[in-house]
Length: 318
Length: 283
Image (cartoon, rainbow over all chains, first blue to last red; front, side, top):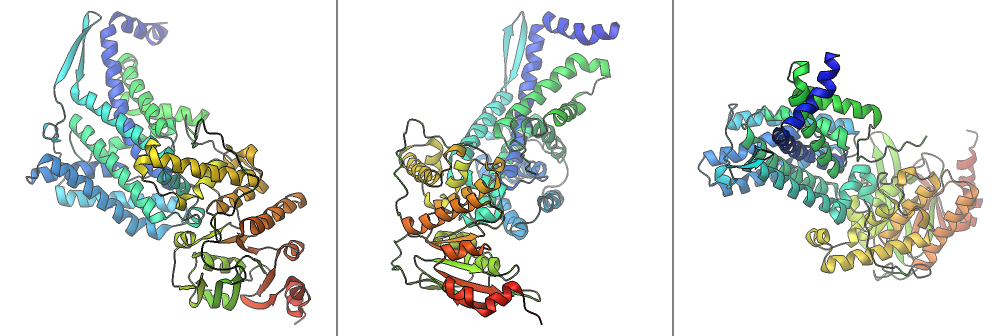
């Protein structure tokens, strides 16, 4: 009886008793949701264009952020460092296409997947060699990102919004909308989807695989840099971020691997879900719920809707 | 995702207009493509040995032969998927060295595949739109905002695609993801995608494989219409002899990577080498 009360009644009583605190929890959930969505977006881009889960997306986030911070530490002005970091991601995209993908045209997806794992370890090594392994702090204020916070009085209590969180949400929204339109409306967007479906057929209608892959890896690099800046601003820039990036997996399972809106909704579901669950139900399970909650939701989705909320329908003709 | 152009009503003309098939300065009946002494091998396997033939502008040229004769390899050479070790391909009077498939496409060579190769997640409409990739030139920035020249361009291409859909009688499946379609219709969509590029030379790899009689008749009619109405030169590989005899202007016969006959369908049909290759001879 006690248990039922603790599960079904008490949390809601708490929510009703302290609505301002509930709002704060929801806001925190929203912010981490957008950040998850941002990471997931990088995966979706490459998955859409090559049908491959890019294991290296996490390390690309770290690498982009490290380049930015590292360049600034050398005395390069912040804006110039940002541009140079973008250029580095461009060079990375070009090299990945030239040195890895070009040789794997028409190979099974699993081969491409393995090559992204190889790429991950290569980038970890290269990153540690150049920038060193110790955590660094993001150059938030130098980049012109807001750092303060605003306090609202609401429901007889207070709600604190960090400005950096608002900025993160806005930047995520801009990236998502921009990329969404790019994919659905442009010639290159259509070509990207074509390449994901069939290499040979794409070649035969005059699509250059090399060009498409370089473009999409560069787009993923831009997303990685944005993600790196935002995550870095909330914690540190360190190789541990790469593990955070794997949170994108449950996000993708919920949203669907090929859907940009899906990445957003999936990210928000995980963000809201794990914060609320942690705060109101976490105590029952001894806390630390945030670590595994996302994966449980993903498992449930896999049982009932394996293609995710917005994924392409799984079509099997026999 | 679709490419809706709202508020525009498309008036589809009866049949397609010959758009660009005749803009390359080669008159009907002249050599459009010449394969000269082409040899291709994979390790020890000699897929093609010293094959030479020509394709004349405006004709339907059939390439036939038993399984493993090198027919598809030959198409892959023309299309740039394979690069022959010896010999040359001359297209539109230009001898070419190693080219990539997307370059062949930009020169006006379209193709379909033996095992249908469509973009399964995309709709019929988007598949055919993808065939027009090379025809679209506007900056992606304008395309994103559907603005100015890019909007006009989108409408123009959409109209061309609607004409193809109309021509192939696939209006009903316009918005269906092609992965859900039955095989016969998939083949038709694939033909539509190849046509969307307004090719000078259309390569069809077994366009009627796995079809029933009615579907074969439909496909034959489309091929003849493409040839006569659009003036598109067609090279096709086909196993159904009846179809080949009806469609083709001239036939080249391959066996074990070698050319064994070349000529009018009636001549080839009577050729002893061809009969032997198909029926087998006691050794």
